[in-house]
Image 1 (cartoon, rainbow, N blue to C red):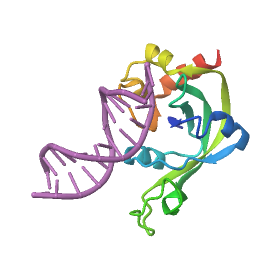
Image 2 (cartoon, rainbow, N blue to C red):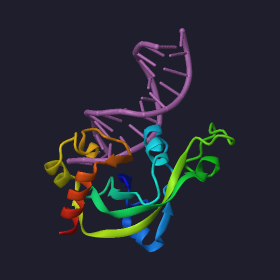
Image 3 (spheres, protein in one colour):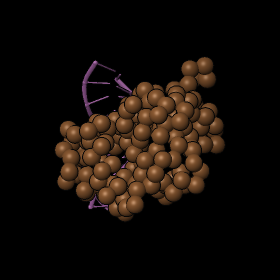
Image 4 (cartoon, rainbow, N blue to C red):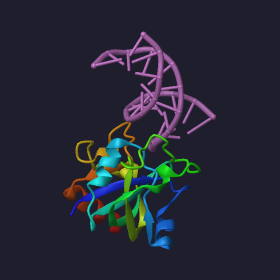
Length: 151
DNA sequence: GCCAACGTTGGC
DNA sequence: GCCAACGTTGGC
């Protein structure tokens, strides 16, 4: 079982939206490194739900991978903002996963707190200029995050 | 809204 | 394959 962190702008889709929907398809990721992480996710993996471009930004909750390696349908939808005309139909470029709501933390764990607690080596998220929207989290770090978030 | 830090594109 | 120009992300 692996831990991950996935970013979403809460104005587009928040932890409360996921709580309401119970599951969602994490579509729209158009970065190869993030795509590769998505492809390596397995059912039961846990992922932190990070609110980016928020005030303040931070980790809002936890979710679980419920379906692995799904072809992202938005790449073939000309009306979608994630449409990719260059993606071959017989070899889709963009994959993703379905995630399931696990919990919303009592209070948001702000990026600032994470910066104080973890070095960039421990948690890629806090590396300056990091724009990756899907990233792995070390198990030890994940445990500490859970402890902080739940207390 | 600004802009630094990226990732991508395309000419050469 | 290099790299300048461009577009995007996301903290502030």
